[in-house]
Image 1 (cartoon, rainbow, N blue to C red):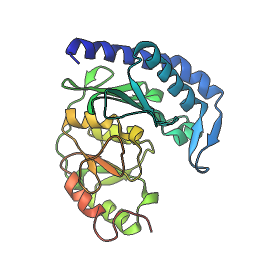
Image 2: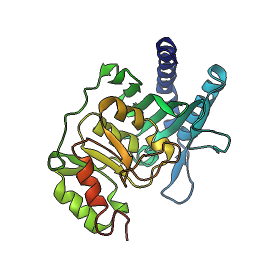
Image 3: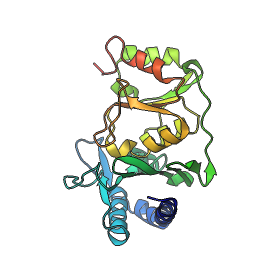
Length: 264
């Protein structure tokens, strides 16, 4: 894909994302909520409608593009071949339902397995974070400066304490400067991308939770791996960390010591 094609596609996606400013308020005003695996695993008409509308957008404009997304069967998708979009229509559904705050739309675009465009749209705060392969990362069109290297002792870190054992939690608390958890993988990751957090750790993400972060990490010199410090496969996902390079090794040493991160 040449530069002109990339710019054209980016313009089209950003224009589509802006249409959500008219769609989301009406959907939230008539929000319908149901559960999937359990009472904590929520889905709403907001998630479903946004995903369906993006699928229709692709069908109408880019029919050869595939969509791997949360609220659909993905059996027909070959995620490492051709043009593939990975979407979380609402990342942070619980936050949407309970707070109407701290949720976002995640879109990652891969060409033959290479991350090429990424978007994290923080709709409630009207902040569109994007990354373009070879051209950096931006928030509402303003370049994001790569974060300075940060020691863990100076860093705020983010993780879900409900899924880690107490020893690991306490060791992380002791080693880091402080702790925060937003409850949206995309928005917790944005804090790392912008240099506000040193790291975000997620022990059970799906591909759509982390699709956009790969390109942001590449363009900004961040570190993104499995919790075993191995290559992270965007198509299968799994426990991961996105971090400032100055925090990465020390955090993984703590997570993998003793009983590890699994809750007991």
